[in-house]
Image (tube, rainbow, N blue to C red; front, side):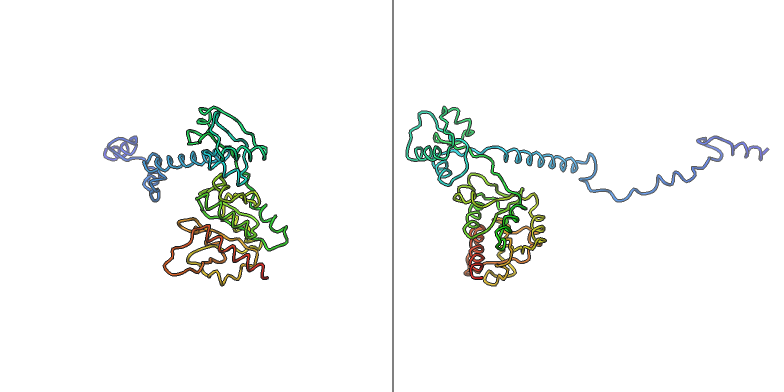
Length: 319
């Protein structure tokens, strides 16, 4: 009878408290296996850190979209002095707005006369309308509409430089965010025979009316290009035979010893605060410093660029 009881127990269904249980065939063991290391918090769905990271990405994407939209919109310069200076510097403009009943002084008369000579539309508008156009800025009854700058492509700069039959000389700005420094570098580049200037698409000043005005109109005589990726552009130019030289206070060579000055050359100017970025520095064939008297702070980015470009031009004339 005992044997019969054991056989009956062996036939009990799984899940009963007594008797043999049908095996899992090893399937349950897989459920006990580890799933690997825990991913970082920013990669875990529904984790607060992941949500914060996603929100930051959305904000950055929105900021870039606003920047792209703003770059395609005309710029409005407000105020009698800024408008007069822009027109004297040859800044491209599409319209000059003059408030009705304005007290015309020499600046207003000069601005209207220059605009008429250049074929720029002179429009008289109500002061309330001018307030809207300038978004409440202090316009003193005068405003100038400047179209978006027409940037060249970096490849066009090199092609144009090669077509001159001279060793190319190009200038690249790495993170220069002050439009006045940008304008001053463009002015120096034009003065010392450079064939073009390139700026990065991000983290850089653009060709605003302030940059135009500081360049004293030379931006109309030297092409300015915008690079989507400055490091990639420098690598492409290096493959085509250009030497890349970066301005740096702790440069590997001093300006007096720069033997590359007469070669096909790209001069890279770093930002006002941190200088050259790491990736750009790594792609430089040399970094050059300017000898200075002891105890003097480093030069402004645009001033340093002018000193270096003047020395390059001097050596090229002596070839």
